[in-house]
Image (cartoon, rainbow, N blue to C red; front, top):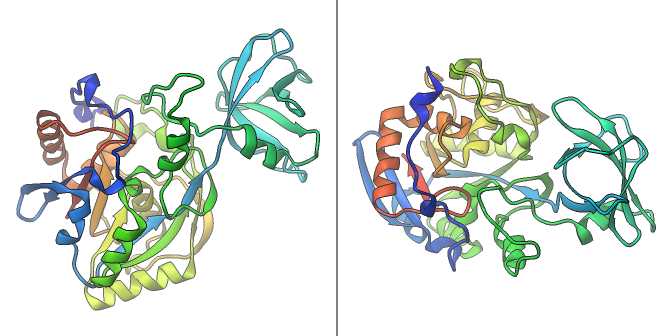
Length: 350
């Protein structure tokens, strides 16, 4: 299929710049595939569309403050986005990063983050990345990152530097159940849940289980191929606990639905699925790229936000619900004033 078949027009004002006052106050579009109909409601009423016995599978990755604003000795600014630790470094202090510029940087150059905290430029790496070594005066570079780093918001969420909304972003660009540090972007479908709403759903017989996929550049890697089948996703670290594998098997046995909370969960579950629908537990990279024609072996329903055009995320949602049906729903969402992307509204596909 051609990439331009996954395009749509979105007015700029539909891109949400801030979260709703309450997480569960966002709007929710229900897309019922069987009945081929749409129901519009609010997220706090999601329980009306779930059943006792259903299983919500959550991605418990936690966004860490991976964005470092640094200065060269000349005063020039370099923004670093920490992507992953350099393999083979026993100290753990070397990282692969995306850099806003490498102009004038030579191996050994020091970039100042804050008093007592610097990044040493080690050179360029593959995939358009650079290597740096983080150096903290007290020897604890990870603690220095937590103190001086900031949440790496997507570029379509515009912020000043500094911005009074930064404290809100630090809380709200994170799911309430996040616990495993490692992501540079939030699994945004989960941003709508509150702890109270999750407890309410559990009281109604809806169960939950967790897995981890540390969202990295691979999730948002632009699709540049003309034919979508020629695109490849960069693998990202993932983990499926044994108890989650058992919870999915139990859900299947009782006739419940496996509800993936976000496209990252879909990718991991379908990547780990055996032919009989059971899930292989354990750790490993996930580079699953799901396109129309994929046979879904595990996921029965999907909660997701409204995604950018011409992206692997929209392609995945189209594979699950049908391209024409999804694009028609997106057109309706635009017409009815829905908010799009990370801080936007949600869609539940049944």
